[in-house]
Image (cartoon, rainbow, N blue to C red):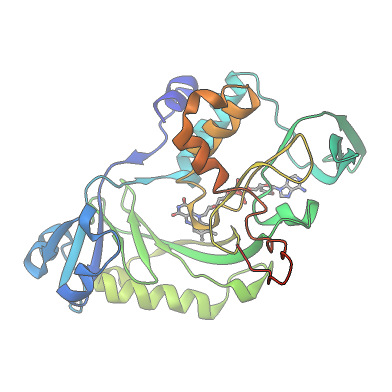
Length: 307
Ligand SMILES: Cc1cc2nc3c(=O)[nH]c(=O)nc-3n(C[C@H](O)[C@H](O)[C@H](O)COP(=O)(O)OP(=O)(O)OC[C@H]3O[C@@H](n4cnc5c(N)ncnc54)[C@H](O)[C@@H]3O)c2cc1C
C-alpha cells in the first residue's frame, strides 16, 4: 500500500480501524472459528466500541489487527495512477474474445477494441484475471458468479469508528461518515444485472439490527457486483491448462484482501523468482491449483472421488 501511495502520490484509503464481530451470546462468540485472535467483549465493552449498537448483541470479538480500505473511491484511483507512472498501458473498453493456443501452448489473444475493431496480440505469456467472467474464456475453470448488492448512507463523520461484521451484513464506516452496508450473496442470480427490492430490503434489515439509528441516514449509492466463486471458495492461482497462461482468478469475497499477495506471487513466478519464496510458499501455491477439484483417476477396482 505504501508503495502504491509513493508511486501515485495519492492515498489508498487504508484505515487500520479494527473489526468488531457481534454475537447474541458469549457461547456463540467463544465458538467462532477465529476467536483466539480476537479480544473478547461483553455488552458493556460492545457499547463502548460501537455506540448505538442494536440491543440483540450481547457479546463480541474485537480484531484490532484488521481494517478496511476505500477500494472504490481511493485505492483503484491510486493504483491506476501508480501503474501509469510505471509505464503500464491500459486499453479501456477492450474485450478479449479468444485465447489463441497451439499444442497446449499459449500463442496470443484475440480481442475487440473499444471501437469494435478485431485485434490480436502475439504472446507466449499472459495472466487471466477476468474475475467472474474467467470461465467464459476458459470453460475448464470452475468459476461461477455470486452476485452481491450493496448500499451506502451518509452518516455524521466519526459516528462509527470500527467495522461491524454481523451475520449476513457488515457496516464499513469511511472517514467522512459514509457508511457502506454489505452485502447480499445471490448465487442463483447468475449474471443478472441490477438491484432488487429483496436484496436492498435484506441490507436494510441487517443495518437496522446492527445500528438502528443509521436507518434514518440518507442513502447515497446502491450498486452490485459479481464475486468469482470456485467450489471451495479459494482462488485459482498458477499456470492453468494452457502452458504460459497464468491464472489469478476465483477470489470470491476476498479479492481486494488478497490482491497484493496474488500480484506478488504471480509476478515472482513470471520473473523467475518463485524459488526464493521458500518451500512453505510453494506448498500454499500448490493448494490453489486450478485442477484441484477434478476427480482423481480411479485405480483398478477403485472409485473416483472429488479432491
Ligand atoms: C458486493 C461485493 C462485496 C465485496 N466485498 C469484498 C470485501 O469486503 N473484501 C474483499 O476482499 N473482496 C470483496 N469482494 C470481492 C472482490 O470484489 C472480488 O474478489 C474481486 O473484485 C475479484 O477481483 P478480480 O480482479 O479477479 O475480478 P474483477 O474485480 O471482477 O475484475 C475482472 C475484470 O475483468 C474484466 N473482464 C472480464 N472479462 C473480460 C474479457 N473477456 N476481456 C477483458 N476484460 C474482461 C471485467 O470487466 C473486470 O473489470 C466483494 C464483491 C462484491 C460483489
